[in-house]
Structure formats: C-alpha cells, structure tokens
Length: 348
Image (cartoon, rainbow, N blue to C red; front, top):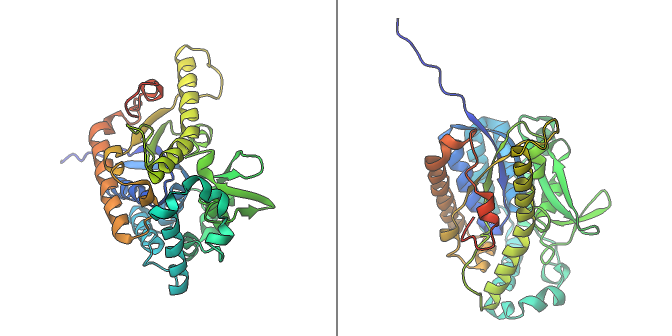
C-alpha cells in the first residue's frame, strides 16, 4: 500500500501594513506573492492609510473567494485607485490638479508654508477622494462586518485628542477606512459619531498593539514602506518634506518597537510569568534600496504603470523574505529590535 504524506500545516502570521501613499502598491505586491506562495495563513491584519486600503481589500477578497479572490480584489482596487480608474472625467481632472499642486517643484519651494496657506477647501473644494470611489464600488462593508475569519484593525488619529483610534472589523465602515487615509492637507477631517479623524499614520503606522492581545498568533510580519534610516541630509524642498514625513510617520512604530523589546526582555527574565503578556516575534518585509530611489513626490503618483512597477518590487521583496526566513516563522524573530533601535543602526 502506498503511503501518502499529509501536507505540512500552514504557518500562521499577523500582518502589519504601513501607509505611504502610492507606495502602498509595494504592499499590494507583497500580499500578492504571499497569497500565491500559499504557505502562510493569516490571523489578523493591522493597516493604516494606504495600508488600511490594502488590509480591507485583502479581507474582502478572502471573504469572497479565498486566496485567489484576495489577489483579484487587490488588483481591482489598485486599478480603480489609479488616475485612469473609476473616476468620472471631471473628478479625475480635479484630482490630477490637486496632485500636480502638491508635487510640482515651484509649489514645493513653499513646502512649509503650504500647509498654512492652503486648506483642503481651497486645493480640493469638492472634497474628491478617488479612494472612496474605489472602495465603495469594491467592498461590501455589511458583509465584511458579518464575518470574522480574519481580524482587522484600522488606525486613525483623533484630531481633538491626538490619540490613536483603532477600528475593528465588526464595526468597520467606509468612513472609518477613509479616516485612516485622511491627509489633512488634501481632505477635510472625516467625522465619525461626532469625532473628527485624520490619517492614522500620525499615531500608528501601523498600530501593532491590537495584534498582541487580540490574536492568538505571536508572529507579526511588518510590511514597511517608509525607511527608518536614510543616509545623507536632504537639501531640496521636496526631499526635506519627504524626510520629515518619514520621521513623523515612523515615530509611533519605533515607540512600539521599544515597548516590544522591553516586554521581551522582561519575559526572558521570568518577570512576567502569570500575566497576559506574550513574546512577540517580529519580521519585516521591505525594499529600502529600491523604494529609496523614488522621490517623495512619487507617493502622489497615481499612474497605474507606477503601481505595477511597485507591485513587482513588492513581489520580489516577499519572495526574498520567504526564501531567507520561512523556517524561522513560528520559531524566532528575524527583526533584531535592539539593532533597529540603536542610534547608530544602519538599517532596520
């Protein structure tokens, strides 16, 4: 009698998806490869801004059609979010003018004054957001809320308190996802139950803490878009503003890194026995060298050809990660937090 071998069980991970404008298409590529590879299962997904868009479409696609459904859903979203996507011509022209305003060199010369001189009502008087059009046509939020096979955590920033708000799948609405991606220089605050929200990247990019206590999985795979380290001093207006944004949007992530490192050391010392704390194994998928070649203005590039280029970079980064670290998943962290947090660390 021939003996058959049962397939190896899938390794379960949590995903943490950073925001970063158009560079979120890099994350599309990462997710696309992980889904195609088929060796991972997913417990929870935390996403912010563009990471929230990826997280919601990932979950909706899984709900509709499993792994292939998620790949199809993500592809449809990024096509719809592009300039030649689902917007009517009038709205598309307005979005292009807004993007041109914030990425054109003459305007960038006033990069610091711009936020003070121009409010969303002046640069985007109709409040057009192509992501809302794309999401509303692709995601059935009522159906998404009704299932819980994949935990979702979407971060936004409370404008009044400056604190992070994490929205979870059972309550999730289109407005909550839009709040996570609400850049205050382009769009008016999204008001939910009387509370105004801005982009979640200011306070959680992405929020890791819900994955610690609300999932059973200890492995977190961070898909990192914004480089923590960038050598040299920027000199142009665009590069200066871009680096300021990177530092700002990475600050809450570094705070969570410090908290994880502190708790991990306490656990190893046996000082947290009998508590709810658990050891977290962190991993990162990134392509700092390749993404670093694109200027800050490219985060506003909504051309579908650019999205496809980033997608391929993401697929290669995911393949490289799995080739190097698949065996470590479920066993040990592959991100050295102490090195990442060191003041003289060369890279994450």
